[in-house]
Image (cartoon, rainbow, N blue to C red):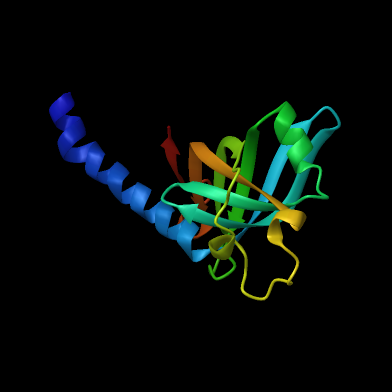
Length: 147
């Protein structure tokens, strides 16, 4: 059984990890969704990927920081607008506040002169499950990474 894993399944998982990491690199905006005592909450945010982890930039005025203190579980949806059919990445994970983010790599170049720490908080998200859904390959076609 272990030999089957090493020779057939492991290379496929490595290929899927590379595909997902490249997908994350090609995009910069996701919809971040979480829940709290008031219910579900979602908003578009800038993000940067580091391998399969992502760092999300969230405005301080948004309720997400409060909700993430209550429940750090998040769901990200990253749509591929360049795809000929509906294609997206669904990313479930756990968010943790970053105390000293690298602002220069997180912010788009055209951002204002206001200090970023006055406007934003940043969360690093470690994946628990990532689904790549591609309807060009048929209804329900998805590839999944579980962690």
